[in-house]
Amino acid sequence: MLQAPIPSFQRFAHQVEVYARVAEHAPLFPRPALAAATVQDLLSVARSRGLLLTGGRFTGKSTFLRHDLLPLLRSDPSLYPIVIDFMAHEEAEPGAVILQTLCAELQSQDGVVRRTARKLGLTGLSLGGMQMSPVQAEADDFKGVLKMLRALSAKTGRRLILLLDEVQRTQTSDHGRRVLLSLARSVNSLNVDARPGPRILATGSHAHKLRKMTFGKEDAFHGATVRALPPLGGDYLQWLHAQVPVRGRPSSGLMASAFDRLLHRPRDLISVCQVLASYDGNPQHVIDRMFHLLVEECADDGKTEFLLHLRDLPDLPLALSRVMAEAGPEFAPFQLWCKRLTAALVQARRKLPAPPEFTEGEISDALNVLVARGLIWRGLGFVFEHARFQRWILSLDPAVEFGLAAPGGQPVSALLSVASEQGAPRLVS
Image 1 (cartoon, rainbow, N blue to C red):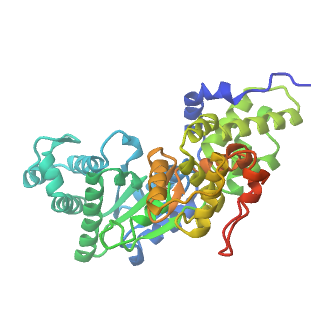
Image 2 (image 1 turned 120 degrees about the vertical axis):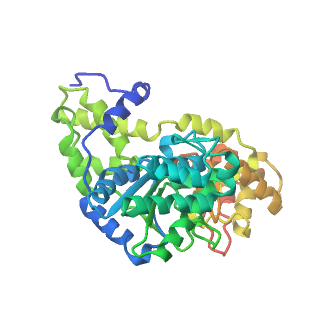
Image 3 (image 1 turned 135 degrees about the vertical axis):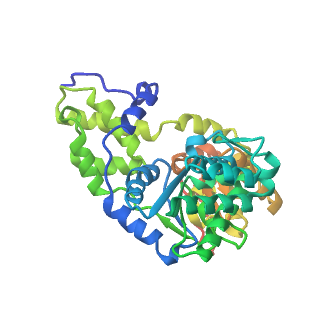
Protein backbone atom coordinates (compact mmCIF):
# COMPACT_ATOMS: atom_id res chain seq x y z
CA MET A 1 0.00 0.00 0.00
CA LEU A 2 1.20 3.51 -0.81
CA GLN A 3 2.60 5.08 2.35
CA ALA A 4 2.98 8.61 0.95
CA PRO A 5 1.21 10.59 -1.77
CA ILE A 6 2.63 10.33 -5.25
CA PRO A 7 5.00 13.31 -5.52
CA SER A 8 4.35 15.85 -8.22
CA PHE A 9 7.07 17.37 -10.30
CA GLN A 10 5.04 20.58 -10.15
CA ARG A 11 5.87 20.68 -6.45
CA PHE A 12 9.43 19.80 -7.29
CA ALA A 13 9.56 22.57 -9.91
CA HIS A 14 9.13 25.19 -7.19
CA GLN A 15 12.20 23.73 -5.45
CA VAL A 16 14.27 23.32 -8.59
CA GLU A 17 17.08 25.57 -7.38
CA VAL A 18 17.43 23.60 -4.16
CA TYR A 19 17.49 20.26 -5.95
CA ALA A 20 19.77 21.62 -8.69
CA ARG A 21 22.28 22.56 -5.99
CA VAL A 22 21.98 19.09 -4.52
CA ALA A 23 22.55 17.56 -7.97
CA GLU A 24 25.54 19.82 -8.64
CA HIS A 25 27.16 18.77 -5.36
CA ALA A 26 26.36 15.08 -5.82
CA PRO A 27 29.31 12.70 -6.35
CA LEU A 28 30.72 13.05 -9.84
CA PHE A 29 31.18 10.15 -12.22
CA PRO A 30 34.84 10.10 -13.25
CA ARG A 31 35.79 9.58 -16.89
CA PRO A 32 39.60 9.27 -16.72
CA ALA A 33 40.03 7.14 -19.85
CA LEU A 34 38.04 9.56 -21.99
CA ALA A 35 39.93 12.52 -20.51
CA ALA A 36 43.31 10.92 -21.23
CA ALA A 37 42.33 10.10 -24.82
CA THR A 38 40.98 13.62 -25.36
CA VAL A 39 44.14 15.29 -24.05
CA GLN A 40 46.34 13.05 -26.17
CA ASP A 41 44.30 13.92 -29.24
CA LEU A 42 44.24 17.65 -28.41
CA LEU A 43 48.03 17.84 -28.10
CA SER A 44 48.63 16.07 -31.41
CA VAL A 45 49.80 17.93 -34.51
CA ALA A 46 46.46 17.18 -36.18
CA ARG A 47 44.61 19.41 -33.68
CA SER A 48 46.66 22.58 -34.14
CA ARG A 49 43.51 24.28 -35.45
CA GLY A 50 41.45 23.24 -32.47
CA LEU A 51 39.17 20.52 -31.16
CA LEU A 52 35.46 21.29 -30.75
CA LEU A 53 33.32 18.98 -28.59
CA THR A 54 29.55 19.00 -28.99
CA GLY A 55 26.74 17.58 -26.89
CA GLY A 56 23.20 18.40 -25.83
CA ARG A 57 22.48 20.98 -23.16
CA PHE A 58 23.15 19.77 -19.61
CA THR A 59 24.52 16.41 -20.77
CA GLY A 60 27.81 16.74 -18.90
CA LYS A 61 30.14 18.72 -21.19
CA SER A 62 31.09 21.35 -18.61
CA THR A 63 31.42 18.72 -15.89
CA PHE A 64 33.76 16.71 -18.10
CA LEU A 65 35.78 19.81 -18.93
CA ARG A 66 36.15 21.01 -15.33
CA HIS A 67 36.34 17.76 -13.39
CA ASP A 68 38.09 15.43 -15.82
CA LEU A 69 40.04 17.40 -18.42
CA LEU A 70 41.15 20.37 -16.32
CA PRO A 71 42.70 18.37 -13.43
CA LEU A 72 44.52 16.16 -15.92
CA LEU A 73 45.91 19.17 -17.77
CA ARG A 74 46.95 20.83 -14.51
CA SER A 75 48.77 17.69 -13.45
CA ASP A 76 51.19 18.13 -16.36
CA PRO A 77 53.83 20.74 -15.40
CA SER A 78 54.49 21.53 -19.07
CA LEU A 79 50.91 22.73 -19.67
CA TYR A 80 49.11 25.93 -18.60
CA PRO A 81 45.32 25.52 -19.00
CA ILE A 82 43.06 28.60 -19.06
CA VAL A 83 39.27 28.24 -18.81
CA ILE A 84 37.11 30.83 -20.60
CA ASP A 85 33.59 30.16 -19.36
CA PHE A 86 30.88 31.99 -21.28
CA MET A 87 27.98 30.45 -19.36
CA ALA A 88 29.38 31.66 -16.05
CA HIS A 89 29.13 35.20 -17.44
CA GLU A 90 25.88 34.93 -19.39
CA GLU A 91 25.05 38.62 -19.04
CA ALA A 92 28.51 39.78 -20.14
CA GLU A 93 29.49 40.57 -23.71
CA PRO A 94 31.38 37.44 -24.88
CA GLY A 95 34.30 39.32 -26.42
CA ALA A 96 34.85 41.07 -23.11
CA VAL A 97 34.75 37.70 -21.34
CA ILE A 98 37.69 36.50 -23.46
CA LEU A 99 39.70 39.66 -22.89
CA GLN A 100 38.86 39.78 -19.20
CA THR A 101 39.94 36.18 -18.68
CA LEU A 102 43.26 36.72 -20.44
CA CYS A 103 43.88 39.95 -18.53
CA ALA A 104 43.11 38.20 -15.25
CA GLU A 105 45.66 35.51 -16.11
CA LEU A 106 48.21 38.20 -16.91
CA GLN A 107 47.42 39.93 -13.67
CA SER A 108 48.23 36.76 -11.79
CA GLN A 109 51.74 36.80 -13.26
CA ASP A 110 54.06 39.08 -11.25
CA GLY A 111 55.78 41.82 -13.20
CA VAL A 112 54.53 40.99 -16.67
CA VAL A 113 51.13 42.63 -16.22
CA ARG A 114 52.34 46.22 -15.94
CA ARG A 115 54.67 45.94 -18.91
CA THR A 116 51.92 44.33 -21.02
CA ALA A 117 49.38 46.92 -19.89
CA ARG A 118 51.65 49.77 -20.99
CA LYS A 119 52.28 48.13 -24.37
CA LEU A 120 48.54 47.56 -24.96
CA GLY A 121 47.51 51.02 -23.76
CA LEU A 122 44.99 49.62 -21.31
CA THR A 123 42.84 52.53 -20.18
CA GLY A 124 39.14 53.17 -19.75
CA LEU A 125 37.36 49.78 -19.73
CA SER A 126 37.63 47.54 -16.69
CA LEU A 127 38.72 44.05 -17.65
CA GLY A 128 39.64 41.89 -14.71
CA GLY A 129 41.26 44.75 -12.83
CA MET A 130 42.95 46.24 -15.90
CA GLN A 131 41.70 49.12 -18.04
CA MET A 132 41.23 49.09 -21.81
CA SER A 133 39.51 51.71 -23.93
CA PRO A 134 36.56 50.36 -25.95
CA VAL A 135 38.09 51.69 -29.19
CA GLN A 136 41.39 49.95 -28.54
CA ALA A 137 39.62 46.77 -27.48
CA GLU A 138 37.78 46.62 -30.80
CA ALA A 139 40.37 48.04 -33.21
CA ASP A 140 43.40 46.17 -31.96
CA ASP A 141 41.98 42.76 -31.09
CA PHE A 142 44.45 40.60 -32.97
CA LYS A 143 47.61 42.46 -31.92
CA GLY A 144 46.39 42.77 -28.34
CA VAL A 145 45.37 39.13 -27.99
CA LEU A 146 48.58 37.92 -29.64
CA LYS A 147 50.69 40.03 -27.27
CA MET A 148 48.80 38.73 -24.25
CA LEU A 149 49.24 35.10 -25.31
CA ARG A 150 52.93 35.63 -26.03
CA ALA A 151 53.39 37.31 -22.66
CA LEU A 152 51.62 34.47 -20.86
CA SER A 153 53.61 31.86 -22.73
CA ALA A 154 56.90 33.61 -21.97
CA LYS A 155 56.11 34.22 -18.31
CA THR A 156 54.82 30.74 -17.52
CA GLY A 157 57.30 28.90 -19.74
CA ARG A 158 54.54 26.43 -20.43
CA ARG A 159 52.30 25.40 -23.29
CA LEU A 160 49.00 27.30 -23.21
CA ILE A 161 45.80 25.25 -23.39
CA LEU A 162 42.67 27.38 -23.87
CA LEU A 163 39.39 25.74 -22.79
CA LEU A 164 36.32 27.60 -24.08
CA ASP A 165 33.03 26.43 -22.57
CA GLU A 166 29.86 27.03 -24.67
CA VAL A 167 31.85 28.86 -27.33
CA GLN A 168 28.81 29.40 -29.58
CA ARG A 169 27.85 32.30 -27.33
CA THR A 170 30.63 34.34 -28.96
CA GLN A 171 28.48 34.46 -32.08
CA THR A 172 25.82 36.58 -30.37
CA SER A 173 27.78 39.82 -30.83
CA ASP A 174 30.03 41.31 -33.50
CA HIS A 175 32.69 42.04 -30.91
CA GLY A 176 32.53 38.47 -29.63
CA ARG A 177 33.03 37.11 -33.14
CA ARG A 178 35.98 39.43 -33.76
CA VAL A 179 37.73 38.65 -30.48
CA LEU A 180 37.26 34.90 -30.94
CA LEU A 181 38.68 35.17 -34.46
CA SER A 182 41.64 37.12 -33.05
CA LEU A 183 42.15 34.47 -30.37
CA ALA A 184 42.10 31.61 -32.87
CA ARG A 185 44.41 33.42 -35.28
CA SER A 186 46.79 34.27 -32.45
CA VAL A 187 46.95 30.59 -31.50
CA ASN A 188 47.59 29.69 -35.13
CA SER A 189 50.37 32.28 -35.30
CA LEU A 190 52.03 30.94 -32.16
CA ASN A 191 51.79 27.41 -33.54
CA VAL A 192 53.81 28.56 -36.54
CA ASP A 193 56.37 30.36 -34.39
CA ALA A 194 57.01 27.60 -31.89
CA ARG A 195 56.69 23.86 -31.37
CA PRO A 196 54.86 22.67 -29.40
CA GLY A 197 52.38 25.50 -29.66
CA PRO A 198 49.17 26.33 -27.78
CA ARG A 199 45.90 24.50 -28.28
CA ILE A 200 42.20 25.37 -28.15
CA LEU A 201 39.51 22.99 -26.96
CA ALA A 202 35.97 24.36 -27.13
CA THR A 203 32.60 22.93 -26.16
CA GLY A 204 29.17 23.78 -27.53
CA SER A 205 25.59 22.60 -27.24
CA HIS A 206 24.82 22.78 -30.95
CA ALA A 207 26.86 20.85 -33.48
CA HIS A 208 25.39 22.99 -36.27
CA LYS A 209 26.62 26.18 -34.63
CA LEU A 210 30.10 24.80 -34.10
CA ARG A 211 30.37 23.46 -37.64
CA LYS A 212 29.42 26.87 -38.99
CA MET A 213 32.47 28.25 -37.19
CA THR A 214 34.72 25.89 -39.18
CA PHE A 215 33.17 26.39 -42.62
CA GLY A 216 35.22 29.11 -44.31
CA LYS A 217 38.65 30.70 -44.17
CA GLU A 218 37.21 33.72 -42.39
CA ASP A 219 35.69 31.58 -39.63
CA ALA A 220 37.53 31.31 -36.31
CA PHE A 221 37.94 27.54 -36.35
CA HIS A 222 38.51 26.90 -40.03
CA GLY A 223 40.16 23.48 -40.27
CA ALA A 224 39.28 22.48 -36.70
CA THR A 225 37.81 19.10 -35.80
CA VAL A 226 34.20 18.91 -34.57
CA ARG A 227 33.45 15.81 -32.53
CA ALA A 228 30.52 14.65 -30.42
CA LEU A 229 31.40 14.07 -26.77
CA PRO A 230 30.51 10.41 -26.06
CA PRO A 231 27.33 10.43 -23.96
CA LEU A 232 27.19 8.92 -20.52
CA GLY A 233 26.10 5.29 -20.83
CA GLY A 234 25.43 2.09 -18.96
CA ASP A 235 28.49 2.34 -16.72
CA TYR A 236 27.29 5.74 -15.53
CA LEU A 237 23.77 4.45 -14.84
CA GLN A 238 25.11 1.52 -12.83
CA TRP A 239 27.28 3.90 -10.83
CA LEU A 240 24.41 6.36 -10.26
CA HIS A 241 22.00 3.58 -9.27
CA ALA A 242 24.40 2.52 -6.53
CA GLN A 243 24.53 6.12 -5.24
CA VAL A 244 20.75 6.37 -4.75
CA PRO A 245 19.59 5.63 -1.18
CA VAL A 246 17.98 2.20 -0.95
CA ARG A 247 14.74 3.66 0.41
CA GLY A 248 14.10 5.49 -2.86
CA ARG A 249 16.04 3.41 -5.35
CA PRO A 250 14.14 2.47 -8.53
CA SER A 251 14.68 -0.88 -10.19
CA SER A 252 17.93 -0.83 -12.14
CA GLY A 253 16.19 -1.77 -15.38
CA LEU A 254 14.28 1.52 -15.37
CA MET A 255 17.33 3.76 -15.34
CA ALA A 256 18.26 3.48 -19.03
CA SER A 257 14.80 4.29 -20.41
CA ALA A 258 14.47 7.18 -17.93
CA PHE A 259 17.84 8.58 -18.99
CA ASP A 260 16.77 8.41 -22.65
CA ARG A 261 13.50 10.16 -21.81
CA LEU A 262 15.43 12.92 -20.05
CA LEU A 263 17.70 13.37 -23.11
CA HIS A 264 20.76 12.06 -21.23
CA ARG A 265 20.76 14.98 -18.79
CA PRO A 266 22.44 13.73 -15.58
CA ARG A 267 21.21 16.61 -13.42
CA ASP A 268 17.58 15.86 -14.27
CA LEU A 269 17.95 12.17 -13.43
CA ILE A 270 19.78 12.95 -10.19
CA SER A 271 17.13 15.51 -9.23
CA VAL A 272 14.32 13.00 -9.79
CA CYS A 273 16.15 10.48 -7.62
CA GLN A 274 16.59 13.11 -4.91
CA VAL A 275 12.85 13.79 -4.85
CA LEU A 276 12.10 10.06 -4.80
CA ALA A 277 14.48 9.51 -1.89
CA SER A 278 12.37 11.85 0.27
CA TYR A 279 9.52 9.30 0.14
CA ASP A 280 10.46 6.19 2.05
CA GLY A 281 8.63 3.18 3.41
CA ASN A 282 7.08 2.16 0.08
CA PRO A 283 7.26 -1.23 -1.67
CA GLN A 284 9.39 -1.50 -4.81
CA HIS A 285 6.50 -1.42 -7.28
CA VAL A 286 5.29 1.86 -5.76
CA ILE A 287 8.79 3.35 -5.88
CA ASP A 288 9.05 2.37 -9.54
CA ARG A 289 5.67 3.91 -10.32
CA MET A 290 6.61 7.12 -8.55
CA PHE A 291 9.92 7.16 -10.44
CA HIS A 292 8.13 6.80 -13.77
CA LEU A 293 5.71 9.63 -13.01
CA LEU A 294 8.48 11.94 -11.86
CA VAL A 295 10.54 11.23 -14.98
CA GLU A 296 7.55 12.01 -17.21
CA GLU A 297 6.79 15.26 -15.43
CA CYS A 298 10.45 16.25 -15.49
CA ALA A 299 10.73 15.47 -19.20
CA ASP A 300 7.71 17.65 -19.95
CA ASP A 301 8.59 20.48 -17.59
CA GLY A 302 7.92 23.66 -19.56
CA LYS A 303 5.89 21.89 -22.25
CA THR A 304 2.62 23.73 -21.51
CA GLU A 305 4.30 27.13 -21.80
CA PHE A 306 6.08 26.05 -24.97
CA LEU A 307 2.87 24.88 -26.66
CA LEU A 308 1.12 28.14 -25.80
CA HIS A 309 4.06 29.95 -27.36
CA LEU A 310 3.91 27.67 -30.40
CA ARG A 311 0.17 28.07 -30.97
CA ASP A 312 0.61 31.84 -30.96
CA LEU A 313 2.61 31.58 -34.19
CA PRO A 314 1.19 32.65 -37.56
CA ASP A 315 0.06 29.81 -39.81
CA LEU A 316 3.14 29.60 -42.04
CA PRO A 317 5.79 29.51 -39.27
CA LEU A 318 3.63 27.02 -37.35
CA ALA A 319 3.38 24.76 -40.39
CA LEU A 320 7.13 24.98 -41.02
CA SER A 321 7.85 24.01 -37.42
CA ARG A 322 5.74 20.86 -37.84
CA VAL A 323 7.37 19.90 -41.14
CA MET A 324 10.81 20.51 -39.63
CA ALA A 325 10.00 18.31 -36.63
CA GLU A 326 8.84 15.48 -38.91
CA ALA A 327 11.63 15.77 -41.46
CA GLY A 328 14.48 16.03 -38.96
CA PRO A 329 17.88 16.54 -40.61
CA GLU A 330 16.29 16.15 -44.07
CA PHE A 331 14.33 19.39 -43.60
CA ALA A 332 14.75 21.49 -46.76
CA PRO A 333 12.13 24.27 -46.65
CA PHE A 334 12.76 25.55 -50.16
CA GLN A 335 12.53 22.20 -51.92
CA LEU A 336 9.29 21.30 -53.70
CA TRP A 337 8.30 18.37 -51.46
CA CYS A 338 8.77 20.44 -48.34
CA LYS A 339 6.83 23.39 -49.78
CA ARG A 340 3.96 21.05 -50.68
CA LEU A 341 3.74 19.65 -47.17
CA THR A 342 3.88 23.11 -45.65
CA ALA A 343 1.19 24.38 -48.02
CA ALA A 344 -1.03 21.38 -47.21
CA LEU A 345 -0.88 22.20 -43.51
CA VAL A 346 -1.67 25.86 -44.07
CA GLN A 347 -4.52 24.91 -46.41
CA ALA A 348 -6.06 22.66 -43.77
CA ARG A 349 -5.61 25.21 -41.00
CA ARG A 350 -7.17 28.04 -43.05
CA LYS A 351 -9.77 25.72 -44.64
CA LEU A 352 -8.82 26.87 -48.11
CA PRO A 353 -10.15 25.22 -51.28
CA ALA A 354 -6.60 24.78 -52.63
CA PRO A 355 -3.06 24.79 -51.22
CA PRO A 356 -1.59 28.32 -51.12
CA GLU A 357 1.64 29.11 -52.90
CA PHE A 358 4.45 30.73 -50.95
CA THR A 359 7.46 32.54 -52.36
CA GLU A 360 10.94 31.77 -51.10
CA GLY A 361 10.95 35.20 -49.51
CA GLU A 362 7.79 34.41 -47.53
CA ILE A 363 9.23 31.08 -46.39
CA SER A 364 12.48 32.75 -45.39
CA ASP A 365 10.59 35.40 -43.41
CA ALA A 366 8.58 32.68 -41.64
CA LEU A 367 11.78 30.85 -40.73
CA ASN A 368 13.17 34.09 -39.33
CA VAL A 369 10.07 34.34 -37.14
CA LEU A 370 10.95 30.94 -35.66
CA VAL A 371 14.51 32.15 -35.11
CA ALA A 372 13.33 35.36 -33.44
CA ARG A 373 11.02 33.40 -31.13
CA GLY A 374 13.96 31.24 -30.00
CA LEU A 375 12.53 28.04 -31.49
CA ILE A 376 15.13 27.22 -34.15
CA TRP A 377 18.64 28.13 -35.19
CA ARG A 378 19.35 28.93 -38.81
CA GLY A 379 22.85 28.62 -40.22
CA LEU A 380 24.26 26.03 -42.60
CA GLY A 381 21.07 24.12 -41.85
CA PHE A 382 18.20 24.25 -39.40
CA VAL A 383 18.04 22.84 -35.88
CA PHE A 384 15.72 23.27 -32.92
CA GLU A 385 17.25 25.33 -30.13
CA HIS A 386 16.34 22.58 -27.66
CA ALA A 387 15.96 18.88 -28.46
CA ARG A 388 12.75 18.79 -26.43
CA PHE A 389 11.05 21.17 -28.88
CA GLN A 390 11.01 18.57 -31.64
CA ARG A 391 9.52 15.92 -29.39
CA TRP A 392 6.87 18.27 -28.05
CA ILE A 393 5.82 19.36 -31.53
CA LEU A 394 5.53 15.74 -32.65
CA SER A 395 3.34 14.99 -29.64
CA LEU A 396 0.63 17.21 -31.16
CA ASP A 397 -2.00 15.67 -33.40
CA PRO A 398 -1.86 17.56 -36.72
CA ALA A 399 -5.52 16.76 -37.30
CA VAL A 400 -6.31 18.82 -34.21
CA GLU A 401 -3.74 21.57 -34.68
CA PHE A 402 -4.41 22.15 -38.37
CA GLY A 403 -8.12 21.34 -38.67
CA LEU A 404 -10.11 18.14 -38.32
CA ALA A 405 -10.69 17.77 -42.02
CA ALA A 406 -9.67 19.43 -45.23
CA PRO A 407 -12.21 20.77 -47.78
CA GLY A 408 -14.35 18.02 -49.26
CA GLY A 409 -14.09 15.87 -46.14
CA GLN A 410 -10.60 14.67 -46.94
CA PRO A 411 -8.74 13.95 -43.67
CA VAL A 412 -5.62 15.94 -42.89
CA SER A 413 -3.59 12.74 -42.60
CA ALA A 414 -4.37 12.07 -46.26
CA LEU A 415 -3.27 15.56 -47.26
CA LEU A 416 -0.06 15.08 -45.39
CA SER A 417 0.72 11.93 -47.38
CA VAL A 418 1.37 13.96 -50.53
CA ALA A 419 5.10 13.45 -50.14
CA SER A 420 6.55 13.43 -53.62
CA GLU A 421 8.66 10.88 -55.41
CA GLN A 422 11.68 12.83 -54.14
CA GLY A 423 11.68 10.77 -50.95
CA ALA A 424 10.15 13.28 -48.57
CA PRO A 425 9.27 12.10 -45.06
CA ARG A 426 5.54 11.50 -44.63
CA LEU A 427 3.72 13.54 -42.02
CA VAL A 428 1.25 11.42 -40.09
CA SER A 429 -1.06 12.08 -37.18
